[in-house]
Image 1 (tube, helix red, strand yellow):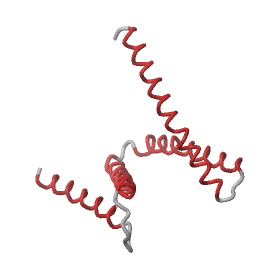
Image 2 (cartoon, rainbow, N blue to C red; image 1 turned 45 degrees about the vertical axis):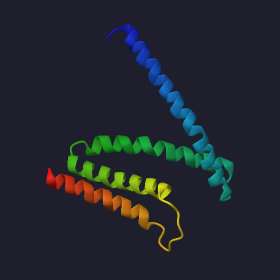
Image 3 (spheres, rainbow, N blue to C red; image 1 turned 60 degrees about the horizontal axis):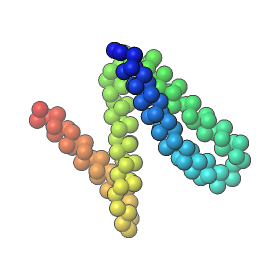
Image 4 (cartoon, helix red, strand yellow; image 1 turned 120 degrees about the vertical axis):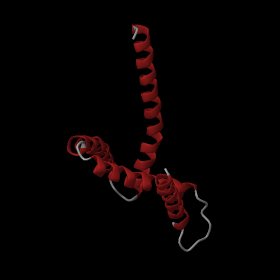
Length: 124
């Protein structure tokens, strides 16, 4: 690979990191404001957000070192996490009509996706 290609790829990666960082700034500010409304002191809010931000990489390292030989367990954890992410996405996207059980459209979307995936696996 030429030096020019490496420089271009490195600058692209740095630009992407800057965009991700710029996107996370307003989210962090809003998280700070929502937690501060509860009545915590600003210092306690910042320390708690810092602790949570360190927890993610620590969990990733633990998963890498302790689960690398357990492919089925890792797949199960990832499937469970993916279902949770799908539920949250549909919870935000699904219309908020007046229902006594407002979580049913989201759960229905996740179950429908699961049925489709199981059917695809069974058919081939």
